[in-house]
Image (cartoon, rainbow, N blue to C red):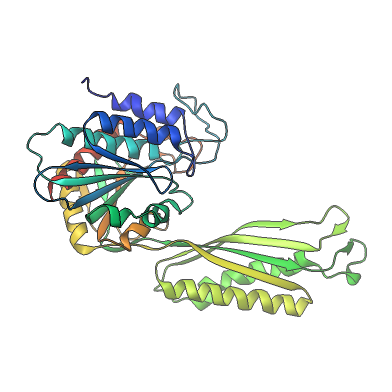
Length: 375
């Protein structure tokens, strides 16, 4: 069987991005390559997720290595020859590269006559919305497969090629989302005294929400409260009746999340009461904090060191990762891997001008293979 051109495979995924759970083409392309290589492939786990098992030796228990498959619902702004052919969909986070690297590792290990372990290769849907891991778990992932530890990886723009980074313990933040709905009384812009202006009320709430970080949470704790949307139903000469404020909160500890929520409810209800408006606050968690197991991180650091250079005390990062859900069921570790320091490879994740670096593929494969061989 001819060797798969992994760069061409990655670029094909890039040209045909799929989002959320709608990953039929992506999942099928990966599954076919794995099946042809002789792995046992189980499709349809958590929707379009799949698990490919390579079992060598006597034990059916093994490590799980995970890659995400989904793209983003944004427009690509590159002029690459393999740019997205689907308007409004774009692999702007590098999941095309993640899937390709894990596929490459599976194919390499399958061809290695000396490999004598069991390893499960997980390809996950809907990482971006934070629901894909839960869907696979709910579909019996840890009941159907004997998984002892689980590992994940994400590329990092601006980090040199061949360099890895991680942190024992808390590594990626939780993500909470909120909506504050304010109801006032609309009216004519020339007679504000006859109305209850929810925009003035909302503006006061936005200002006071900033005091949660500065006055309600200890300086020792990471806490971010970001207002990302402010919507009204007003017009040029019409005072609004309704305002919707929404946003995003980050931290690492449960008590920080609880403090943010309680203070947000107190601030919104207090200001609305003072202004004569009404409000409803909804607050939910989209991503749990990602916590690396110490023993698993030691193995990940060793594997990364054999594949390149490694910063084992990188510190915490403020973004969130759906991989955290897996770590609530099995010990494991998550690492970052350099995507390069120039051009599109150094553009931030989720930027329309970003591109995964094909030169990183071999580094990722080397890491995954070393980790699988560590048992």
